[in-house]
Length: 511
Image (cartoon, rainbow, N blue to C red; front, side, top):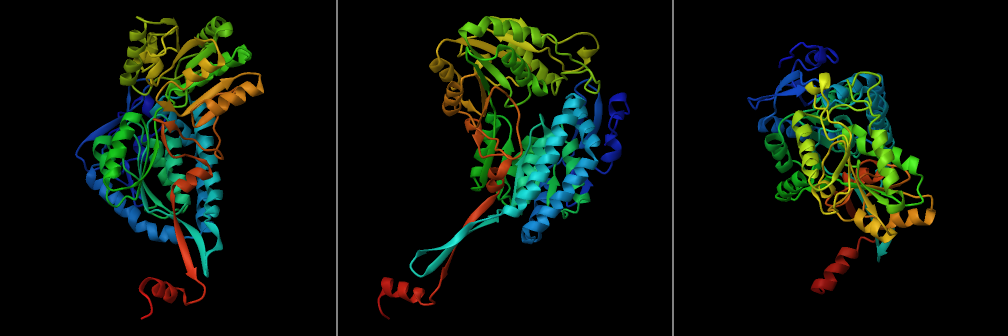
């Protein structure tokens, strides 16, 4: 493991924190055994922060074995005991909030104020929520549904869970995977993205320091092709949870099917932002900029397709472009920065490719280029507004995952809702109107797991997050997420001690 000792690395001393390795198995850091290394790179400067040994299949096997070994004891803990441990976990996270915020901003390039005000507080709140949810591992009340028998339903943990998380919100995605699983009594092996392992490792260490037993939470930092696929297909993993692109999600489902695992998928999105002609134009324009540029657009719920009813269309385009031009790109650790870089130069070039190709069939109103000067060292791209693209064009149908908003006009309400639904995705959407009946119709008819009204992006621990259609299956956060990580068992009692004899007589006659 090597730290180049530059100014970027000094913002978070990763070498000191991960001197023993970047795998967290059975309560301790260890080195990966793949024989290959990978770098954590600051996307704002292009400088290497940390180089670590990647996990191989043997490391995944060790992590799964640790999770399997820890499962009986953790599953046998009372809901109250698991709840107490998670409350302690939330307190440790709160005490280390600044460490988490700095590590998250360094590895992702997101503004420090976003990490401090959104990612870290959201993770702490989610931990506190599941500390409470752990006490609600309920089945159903008993009842007599068949003669002299009493039936009830037990809700039980599943076993060792294998989860794969993306690079856009590494801390929050670790929490969304780990917390409902362990609150329900499961153990887990999490594979974070190899670009962004730092906060997942800190998260696991905080859990250990809070008294959560060794082996309950394990982290393997390897590639998707090697460590990820081996984890998903592992015969001792009872459930797979994956967040990422729809294309990779299909591959995960294919692998998991071979061992008939429980599957939870939160996949891509292409969120529509539908502005009706009675909407508050100023609110909608501000909402579009915030919704499109959150986390530099690297958010599967980000507003990407704005459909604006024709009377407001020109004014919306003009006002949204003007607001985008006021957004300040800069050092993620500087107080005045609104927008950081994309995760990598590869991702920046991918986003630029979408925009450059769109010039032949649409109008790039603002942005559409990487900045020069000092920012040219990083993976920065200017906030971009594209107008007048066709509904079937690439920028409308494909997930760009960058600071790009496409605006299209529509005439009737029927058309606006139809256009909103006209992609394979269905993760999130928003509707903008001052008419409650119009807005309510949109919430009913737009095909998405979340539909905001006169807002876009907020999430809360008590409510579910998850998609329709090609955006996946299953829910994160909320009690619905908690139930995803349980299985139900029907228990049936003979209350007379003679029912079995009666069944025998019915089937085989008197003998």
